[in-house]
Length: 161
Image 1 (cartoon, rainbow, N blue to C red):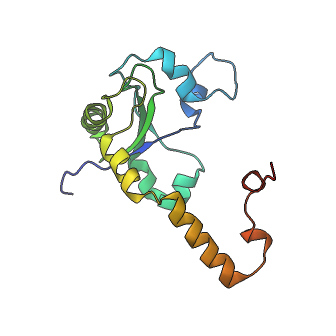
Image 2 (cartoon, rainbow, N blue to C red):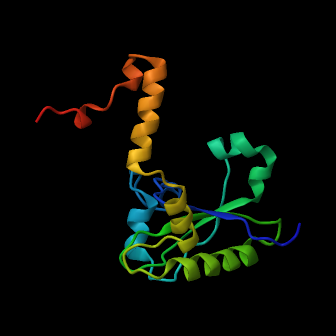
């Protein structure tokens, strides 16, 4: 309503919807980012795809899912393309995709081997708990719950050697 761009970046997409949509290509479990790594040059993006069919996204958004689109963009030469999901009004998908792509590219292209919007990197760094804090929290919960298989540390963290 206010003309605000709303989009999300999928850090490690496992999707293969783009690949499955290619005509004449044999079916496989190949991920979209694997194909597009060699197909896209830095700054290039794919066409936008709508969401259809029974998906988790459709289950959560219902009829609103018709306003959700995706594309892949490659901001960095030596990193996999990013999958970008965005909202667009009816009839404004191409215009919105262009604005979103410019924004994502301009905030993700600063490192040749790691492409993620800088605001996402900063938010992740600020939200991330320190390992020591996690250990204290885990110990407090374990003390209150008592012995439980759920409170046991992972085997790799309890190796005797």
